[in-house]
Image (cartoon, rainbow, N blue to C red; front, side, top):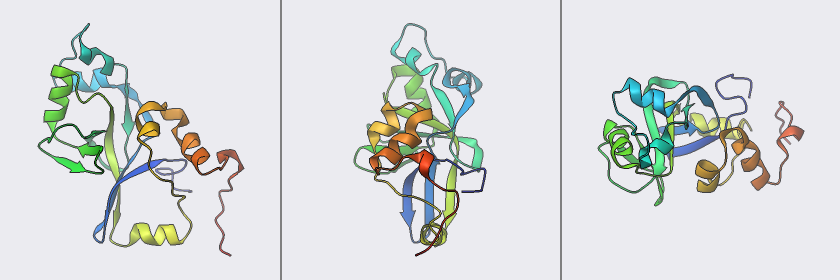
Length: 174
């Protein structure tokens, strides 16, 4: 894709309805760590506690929409104030209470924190898929939470049996 916001992006689609779609780019770490983000919102990460493991996790650029707003993609473990249940196992939360819990208790354990998200209007994603703009692959919580950011795209492509280096930037129609 030529659009620099989405070129070489791996997007976890969180909701897709007749009204549009929302997703989170999961392979674009920023030059900011969670410790810095938590300091900015005045939530301490205590040294030597279970919360310390968050400190060096990267904050990701989740997409070009609402880049000043944080989103936490996580294992669905608790009903937070503002959560979207994506699957039985995964939720997307945008309320401060999840950050507070992360700072207090170190839960949820599996998280991916972003600033911003990717969004599509009604019919837009369907049109882009029909134009061969995107490749689709079944979502994998293993790739989401256990694979380093820089290798997530290659891991997703491998699940399709495709070597990313062999793909062309030009789409075609047969």
